[in-house]
Image (cartoon, rainbow, N blue to C red):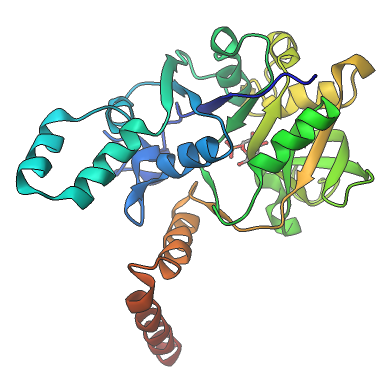
Length: 300
Ligand code: G1P
């Protein structure tokens, strides 16, 4: 029987330089997307998929992140004395959400290196990796489907999204062949951030992975690749073209809603997209937005 998956690893050691000065003293993962820090969406997604054992790979300046998932006694007390049950609930929610552990990355040497730091915690079980820049709409299923594919095929699973060819240089890109399942492909090759024009397809790897523990041994012998960093993509390429016992790599094609919070423009779009659908904000925000967009049209 397949080993059940219970652990999620979330690398959060990035410096967030694209958001300076906001990220000078605050982790980028704590930037609010509407009224929730970006990282909370990701932890909620892991928990919704049944993974409540969460390991964050952190670095300097990440204390706010740890505090967010910890109990803040004086705030709870203040809300309790005011009788503000609704806000108290919001404060407690992130504390009780998951069993969150932390390990420092030390010298950040790339995503592959960050994943390797989880070896002791993960042990010899398959596990999920979620990257904080990607938010997957909770109404669309991705991680649960990936876990199912991993369990059924005992393979390594990546999430693939069709992107515009002008965007392929920003992602790991996969070459694939079909399987019997409409949303599942076999990955035959992977390349990290190919130069424009060199991409073998427009299927981009987005920030969700379900890995088998063999990935650790592969990462240990993966030399620095693109940008001088140890790339997870290079280790996955070795698996995809490696011996049969390693189980190969499969991709789940995601056709749902994904929000990128990794750069400023995408971050702005993510906030607007999520806010218009909120029951508490959408009804007022949507007509305002339509009017504002019409005014913008008049301006041009
Ligand atoms: C990382 C990976 C890349 C992947 C991307 C998904 O890149 O290296 O293969 O496509 O995440 O968001 P980063 O965006 O951290 O530069």
